[in-house]
Image (tube, rainbow, N blue to C red; front, side, top):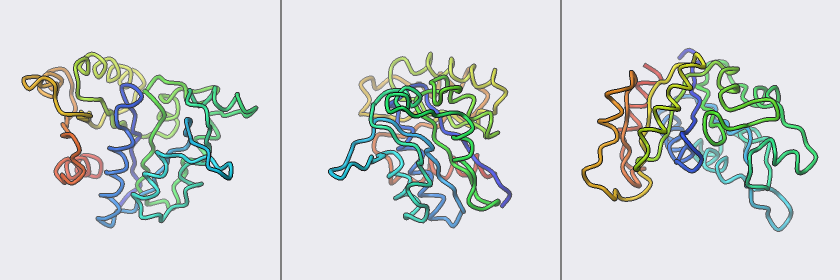
Amino acid sequence: MSAQGVFITGTDTGVGKTWIGSNLCAYLYQNDILVTPRKPVESGCEKSATGVLLPADAYAYFDACNQATMLNTICPYRYEAAIAPDQAAELVGKTLNLEMLVNACTREQADQFLLVEGAGGFYSPIARDALNADLARSLGLPILLVAADRLGAINHTLLTAEAIQKSGLKLVAVVLNQMEMKAHENMDNAESLEKYLDCPVLSVAYQAEKDMRWKQQLTILLLG
């Protein structure tokens, strides 16, 4: 397999990027696809009794790859404050820049699939000198856009898709992640988005971690 990868971003924070990404990572790993998971920076980490910062998102990827990749390698930069990573770093007297994050996203082997999850939305700051968009562009990775499947998703998704296009990056697919049982049975965001987007739109049902179909579809889209 030639070296490939994907950058997972969202229309906002809290839309389920980690849930989608870690489930996809586990599926790739279970199907003998060499994968390099990276969550290079995470803020909002809880502190253990011994003072160690615990990155919940990175732990999801750690478990997804059956702990084959060290947690410190998946997520080398961790901060306690639940704010943008650049501000969280400054609070503790640290500097976080784009070069540091790019270096943290190096593949362990040249032929591995590089799966990188950003922090927040596509235009959210991720370092002192960079947005998520800048990191994705520096890595040269296509984009997987995750949106919460709820009222308002169409506007947020189209705006983010436009930003991705203007950045010169490829939007591989949009994943509509159902965060809870649908409040409106007649709402079909996927059907509406497909009218305006040139990429596939996948709907993931609430708590569908055992549903292999969306994982198979994403694998085909990402690996061909």
